[in-house]
Length: 218
Image (cartoon, rainbow, N blue to C red; front, side):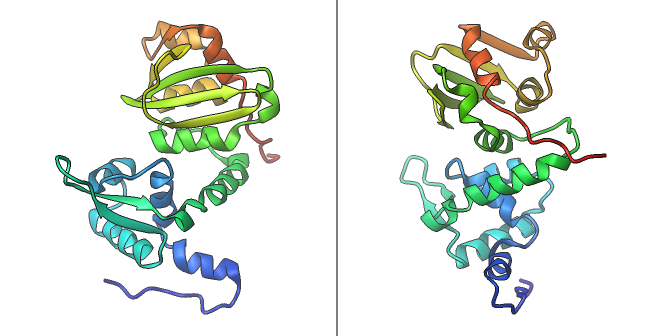
């Protein structure tokens, strides 16, 4: 394994980069913000990271105390990686970086599930959802998420929910287009790219709760 590189600088920001500044490290953290994952799940979320590099980053982050590896009990009996409490404190850091970078972010025709869900947490504006009170089930690339939008608060996490006002099935890329780029829901439905069951107003409330930062001047 390659020797770890340090900045040898007493600044807190430099030490943070010593811990999570290597390529792919913060994206590994991003993939674990919403809960534990197996190595194969991490590979699916970071397909351009080689298995060797990903393994190295996991070891480094585990040594730093950012994440831990544990084995699930039978019948699963598989190993998963999860953030420590200290590692979980990096979510606001990721959100701040996301808001900052969104001012120059180019449009993309592909966004992964966890990246999109974290973007919802990042770009949520409470004042835009002050009157909202609804629950949705999002199924993004067959992965279910519970979404609770209530009086200026957003709660979104993995899992199924009973009695949702609406269920939305699509890819994260399509929903990102609807939420952030003004893609009409009706157009996505007509193209067979998005399915809504239940109350369409619940989806409208969700769409209206997000706003991107102003882009940088050309």
